[in-house]
Image (spheres, rainbow, N blue to C red):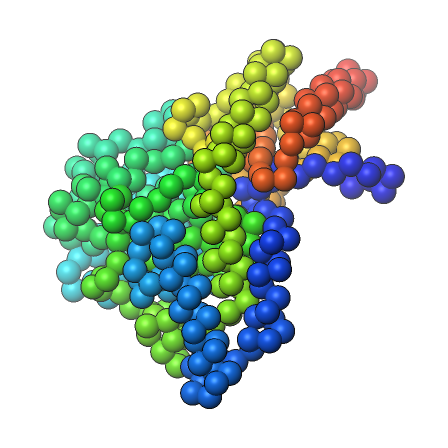
Length: 393
Ligand SMILES: Cc1ncc(COP(=O)(O)O)c(C=O)c1O
């Protein structure tokens, strides 16, 4: 970023979010005073254990789970690994077939690739041009050897929200475990693990204005699952290591704030995002949105502009020089520009060239209408700048 630029606008909230100062404050007592090990018998330990129980209960209530159904982890990646590997190995005698959607995050897809080397068979359910899976297709894929279906709640690149309640119902009827990666949707869309028939669900704190390095896996009571870590038996035997109580406190506070502010924030962000779409459509010929316009997270806009697809990286770097952070496709996996085009955009029917041309804006709590106006003006001048670079070449 250029040094003399003072204005900074962050539109990459799907990658990670700024820590909310209220969350930061809530973590301080656990970094300074409540430092006992929750497994110790003395008063320092019992105080830590009591805090841990209260924080777990607060988080669980936000998704209609029981306290002892939450397993704290280091984040979404670990929760997804625990869900898939833990279910696969614990239920091997029942079957070795897993179904996932084609547009899952890399931490699901790469876990599946590894499970395939361990004797498991994985089927990938495709999505339509809006990014939605076909429920009949999913249903037909389930066979007597299927032990798990994993479909993300909302996609990190295009924000598509899947019909998880209907998926959960199908899985329940067919006696198959249902896991959903809700790292992107948690705090933005109400979630009820009972009403939505969810067996396992991954969440993390850093997408909801909480700290990095903490998340959890919801595991419905009586689910047959194995741990990845073996040790002192913390987290009901499913995740050994001394608990990160300060991180968990931040996670619980971040979740509480998101739940309390959800209806008003969703409305506010939707109107900012819709203004953005309207303005971009008015000003840029060839503007198009990738993914569903209706079944979509309120804060996500993934778009392209015909004719400019080959210049996305240059566009992002020029915007960054002007203080605006946006992303090319998904930045919550490695934003390596030499990487192949987005699997998500190709799954919705884009060719690799179009897929490489996508720009993702993910709005958040600290964005204002002023930011949107500044972005639109800056994008316009930056595109003119790019066009003059082409015409001089
Ligand atoms: C849908 C989704 N799942 C999982 C993850 C990984 O979570 P974490 O960074 O907490 O490991 C991310 C992004 O980071 C994500 O967007």
